[in-house]
Image 1 (cartoon, helix red, strand yellow):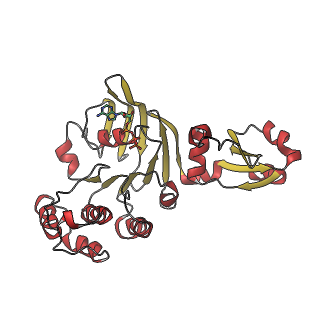
Image 2 (cartoon, rainbow, N blue to C red):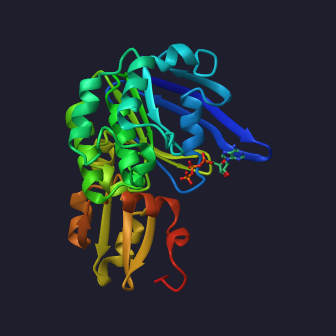
Image 3 (cartoon, rainbow, N blue to C red):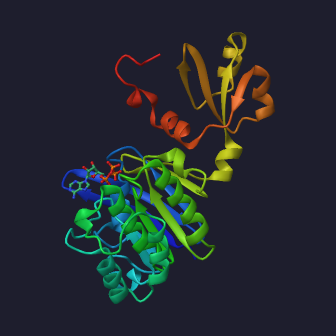
Amino acid sequence: MNCIEATGLRKQYGKKIAVDGIDLGIGTGRIVGLIGPNGAGKTTTLDAILGLIPFEGSLKVMGCDPWRERERLMREVSFIADVAVLPRWLKVRNALDYVQGVHPRFDRSKAERFLARTDIPMKAKVGQLSKGMVAQLHLALVMAIDARLLVLDEPTLGLDILYRRAFYTSLLNDYFDQERTILVTTHQVEEVQDILTDVIFIDHGRIILSATMDDIEARYVELMPRLETVDAARKLGPVTEYAVFGRPVMLFDGVARGHLAPMGEIRRPGIADLFVMMMGRDRYEAPGEAA
Ligand SMILES: Nc1ncnc2c1ncn2[C@@H]1O[C@H](COP(=O)(O)OP(=O)(O)OP(=O)(O)O)[C@@H](O)[C@H]1O
């Protein structure tokens, strides 16, 4: 059974269609990156998965309808929303007390171990911590919950690069195992791509690409053809093409590397490159940057 199974998931706010009939099948033991531009529908999708909003279509999370069976679902799921807040007056120690009191699967010593790697004093109040420290505290609380599904909406927002790296390494080494599933959204795609098993690109409420990292590795190749091979390369039908310093760069889907290599330089596109190319470069070019 898939951990998350959606068919025709749709959410409309007034006239705005935030999620436009998406199908999802996320298996247990996967680490899935939900990647998309601002306003693509990521948070809305996660909110539906967490039972925070009603939706149209069919959605099962750990076998539950999240909207109707939220209480049951919340025993299996932990999450950080992109608007997560902790009360400013709360002491760090009391935040641990609180989660220990309300969540049967909270491992306090684990949370304390996570916090010991930070500069956060147990007796400090949330209001005395920096923005990044609050995020660290939040992550320590959530990662110490023995959940089957962890949903992270922009979990490293406001964190410095050292802690962002440490967070993803810790997520993989100290938290993840084959019984758990992680669904994460982030705009810092390069930092997360090495831990993902799957990626889903979403734009205007629709899924543009859903693939395993292995699929991506096998399917996509970027070619910078030599001048004399540009036409021949174009005949092979690149999915998209853009220019770097006036030279074309083409993205191919399913064309053998051996076929492309003699035409110029080939490389495996990173997720961020693939994302920019598939979403349309124009959208991301600063005025005057167009090649
Ligand atoms: N409560 C709401 N009421 C009205 N419109 C909403 C509401 N929540 C989201 N939307 C709209 O739905 C669309 C998708 O929003 P969503 O927050 O899911 O995007 P996102 O992909 O998470 O974006 P970001 O990366 O900027 O956080 C946007 O156009 C947004 O304005």
